[in-house]
Each structure stands twice: as C-alpha cells, then as structure tokens.
Length: 140
Image (cartoon, one colour):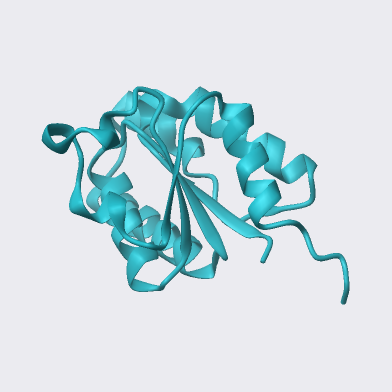
C-alpha cells in the first residue's frame, strides 16, 4: 500500500504540494498531480474536452491509489473524489484544520464512515499519521 492521491481545492495547493512532497520523499507513489492544471484554469483556457480528460485522469488516479488524503476545505471535485474512494473501499485520511467535521452543522455523513480517518493538527501530523498507519513495505 504505497500509492496515494491528494484531493482538495485549488485554494489549498500549497498544502497539497507539501503533503505530496513529504510522502514522495518517504517512498510513496503519487498517482496524479492535478495542481499542474492551475495555470490553464487561471488563464481561462480550459475547454470541455480538457475538463473531460482531466476528470478521467483524476478518476483513474483515485482508483489506482491505495489511499487518499483529503485536505479540507474542498470543492465539488474533492467530494466527488472522496465518493469514488469510498466506493472503491479505499482508506481515506480526512484533514480538517478547523475541526469543522466535528460539528453537525458543518459536517457530512460520509466523513464519519469507517474508512475515513479524521486528522487534525498540522500537515506534518497528517503525514505522520499516514506513515504510521500505512508504512511502506519494501519487500518485493
């Protein structure tokens, strides 16, 4: 279990890139870097065909991953990726920096399913939790 995907929104790109870098540096395999699409999105040059291709790449990356990390707050895509991961019975690390997932008025029923590991604190604590629960198996 060493392939991962990080789901979030463009407004959390720094956090996504930080978590990705920390996991890759420890030997985990990143299945897809959706943050590379930020420039085209910001320039407004994406077409519906581009969106279809990106969506397929993201869907494939979630399916290919052994686990996903979800960094909140997320957008529509984040929650679709969460749904794909749940449907595939993936392990999910759900990071809520403001603990909004612990309040009935700001949570989702899906955040409380058994596959979802709630994470708080710093991004380093998130990475540590992932590494502790899903250590790299170097055996072939």
